[in-house]
Length: 84
Figure 1: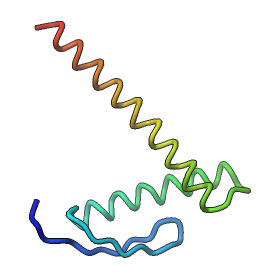
Figure 2 (figure 1 turned 180 degrees about the vertical axis):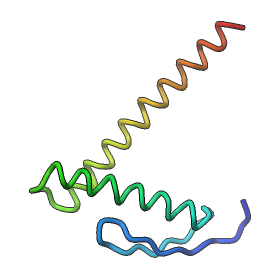
Figure 3 (figure 1 turned 90 degrees about the vertical axis):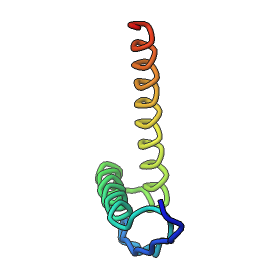
């Protein structure tokens, strides 16, 4: 990646965020859209939660998915090693 900082404004769960970083703006928009969708889904299933709690619950769900995928990936690497 270049040293150039990209600027992009995204909306997540009704809030605008002006972001600056190394990631391509289209990638940031894609991630923001995914997070927005996930937060709306979490909110729909938990109608009484505050936006902050929705954000935390969504983050925990994403972290759980990530750790499960990471574990699956490590197990696949071990299987590949065993087959060699």
